[in-house]
Image (cartoon, rainbow, N blue to C red; front, side):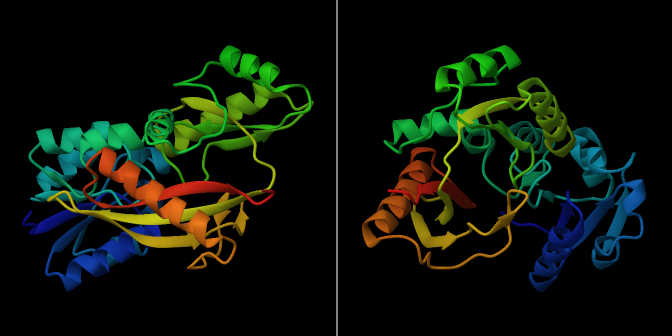
Length: 283
């Protein structure tokens, strides 16, 4: 892949980092901005910046506008950063159809991993344990039935099927209004990722959040870059990363790292990605 001019389909800190990294590689960059981000730092760091229609996150979720801007600016590649459309297989596919290199996993890999329901199925196929949960995009009725099956005193978590970063996630405990939580969670998922679909999962009370970084190339080589502890969080978003994790036994560490590699190899992963795990600290 030879890149001369790259559209950064993101904003803020990640767009600034991408612009700096591209400059070090001699790649020209084009930034984009919503109307309310016209004065943001990332618009001044890129070699050129172009406006998108609308305000807020929705502007950065407009696939057609981003591809049209990339063409108008003479770009040959698009980097989605993280969040927004970075895990959207349809956007990656549209970029390829438009003759633009999507810098990230292939559409097929995003289809398998970007949708959490399919990612859970992949984990099961690779003998990686998962918590009890609904399958596919779940309706409110399906989530209500799942809650009833867990028992009256059990807490569950609603999660967006798309995206990540702690957005579109809500805990629902005994006595909580499930319908209200479902609607709020769905609205947040739609705003953050352009997809309102949710699923429900059993809540693990004493969970630690451990991530494994995996790197795969175009020749079938896959390696892990070890794990990091990300349990200290605010609003479901990590504040501190500690590597290596101080909370894991050596056997658990090896199992997590191997599980991440196994799942990456199962889809022929061709990028740098993070596989996230919940580790039960009560056992």
